Structure formats: structure tokens, C-alpha cells
Image (cartoon, rainbow, N blue to C red; front, top):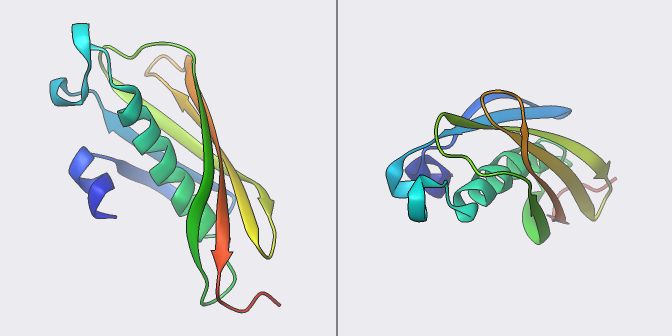
Length: 124
């Protein structure tokens, strides 16, 4: 995913039941006063969530985000943003993934729930 790579998203673990990733704080990813931009948080959540959705697709299928909702809980002003994505539903037409975002101290930073359409493939 070129955009994720450009923004600095890193994947640590990836299988169908859990995907972990991270994004290091950087001044070019911030708003005023050194706060990591909400779009950067959403980029990490969307990227890690998309990998989780992809790993839950039937053979030959692709996916596309059709809905995404993010709640922000706290600002990130340094360190690394961490993401853990898990599938909530893996159906033949929709995959729903929840991604939890946290800071280096394990404090909740945000949560994203996204729905991914299943396109093509062998849906059984």
C-alpha cells in the first residue's frame, strides 16, 4: 500500500484474527502544537484494518472500504501510535473490522470500525 508506506505505517504482525501496526510521531504529520493529525491516526487505523479485512477474504476476492467511523480519545504529541485490528464480522459480502489505537503507555487514543465490501472471488 504505497500511501501507507509514504506516511510511515509499519506492520508488525498480520494474520486473519489480528493485525498489529504502528506509526511514529513526526512533525510533518502534526497539526498545531505538535499534535499528531487526526488524519494520520485514521490512516494507521484504515491501513491496519484493511490488511485485516484482506486476510479474511475468500480466495480471489478484493475489498473496498464502504464505511469508516473513528472516535478520538486523546492527543498524541510524541512517541509511537499503535494499532490492533480484529475482525468483528467476516461475511460473504461485508467484512467489519475494529481497530484500537493506543500510545506508548498503552492508553487508548482512538477506535475505528470499518466496513469493507467483498468484491469478486469465490464466496462459497
